[in-house]
Amino acid sequence: QVLVEESGGDSVQAGGRLTLSCVVSTFPFGSPCMGWFRQAPGKAREKVSTIYTSGTTPVYDPSVLGRFTIPRDNTKRALFLQMNALEHEDSATYYCGVAAGSFAQCRSEAHYDSWGRGTQVTVSS
Image (cartoon, rainbow, N blue to C red):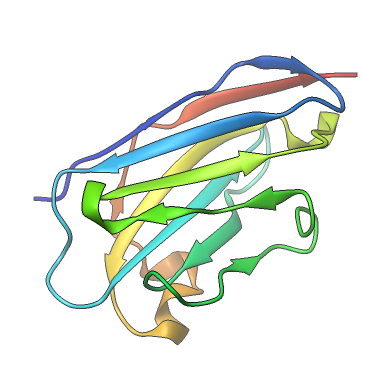
């Protein structure tokens, strides 16, 4: 069983920055995908960014491109989400997802099968 734990959520002012962390108990067999997803109240969960394996180019949702980055440290089984220039629309519960799969599969939220409980980010305007 893969255990996933997120941390780092907080309340910040618009324009501020925040870094979320995700730690995984073990990687699933096969090439691990990791990603950040978010869900705002009344909305469906959406992909923020995913990364296939270290050294590959991450995939970002257009709404966060240029503002968010997704460093990954396989030695620590950790994934981070560095968020800059935060906007009110970024307010949501952020989830870390993990799965085994190919590069193409990693880009699909439906492919992820291990999730954390989420961490709340609130951006006040």
